[in-house]
Length: 360
Ligand code: NAD
Image 1 (cartoon, rainbow, N blue to C red):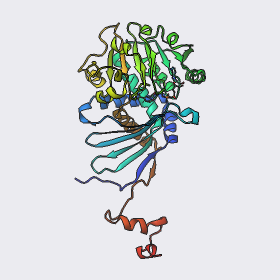
Image 2 (cartoon, helix red, strand yellow; image 1 turned 60 degrees about the vertical axis):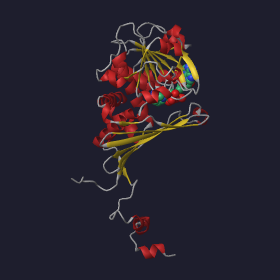
Image 3 (cartoon, helix red, strand yellow; image 1 turned 90 degrees about the vertical axis):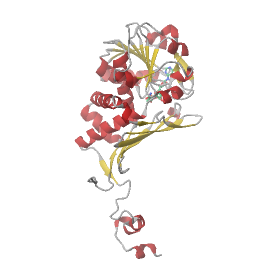
Image 4 (cartoon, rainbow, N blue to C red; image 1 turned 30 degrees about the vertical axis):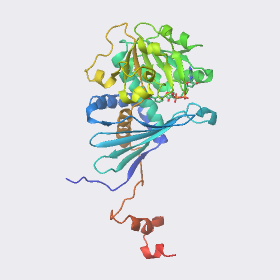
């Protein structure tokens, strides 16, 4: 049966549209909603046509394309990672993406994905931590206090009940900014003068730093029995955060193994180093935490399926709240074979005979 398709108007969700959704619904509720969609989609892992993202590396950063599809919906995200961008007054991470109908290839939604990526990354971190961290964690160290950090704090407070955040960043002004924002959110935080001091005594450690280097932000002597490490910033070849001996002594969980082996902190380990894809834990096919003393690591790099879930969620909410614009991204043709005629006859919004506009 033919679908009832309105020819080729594409919904557009702008940065302002997503900010309006965050204000209307609340950022915590958005993160919770995305987490719910992520859970749903990870439980049907086998339905997806998956590929590791396609990366274009340069001296200062990376630009990546992240495609994925099931039988009905295709999505991709364009995203960069340029840790030194603040010298130009630009963000480290900027993104946008598209959601399309698989049957016809029609682009149904074009959306900003910078704010949305921050929410989906925090949502994914929380989904993994629910399966891996000790029950009822009280405190979390947040190492790296940049653009992603408030979203991480909000997700762990809202979805796991974390009460206290220990903050550290090499740039004290980033910590001051984070503390001010957490104060306004009513979240308790304390600034520390080193990673070691911030990490001490916490249940969860989130590393969300940006530096294009093999950093050793977390070293084995900082690890305490039962800790869960949410490693978010090691997400590119040559860009890691955890000392390799930290990985050696822990149980390591990843999103999509072929991508994580190249991009995650596990890039430091031999190809047979054991890792478990997190969907297997969520689906009950593999154990998560097995004892209170287990040290667990979610070696997050960001996988296309999380953006698929986030785009679905944002489309559904934006449509309900009527916050999408409609744009003309591909031509709506009366006769699909007459693309040439469309370009000339509809030029400048006027319908004119072809011979009049082509002749000059
Ligand atoms: P950002 O540049 O806004 O913030 C990064 C912060 O890390 C800065 O404040 C910087 O001073 C701090 N930092 C750098 N080196 C440090 C160190 N050794 N110790 C403590 N702090 C340090 O970047 P952002 O948008 O917050 O992104 C943070 C990281 O998360 C990036 O590396 C990005 O690529 C990554 N990321 C991962 C995912 C994912 O899905 N895994 C998604 C989004 C972003």
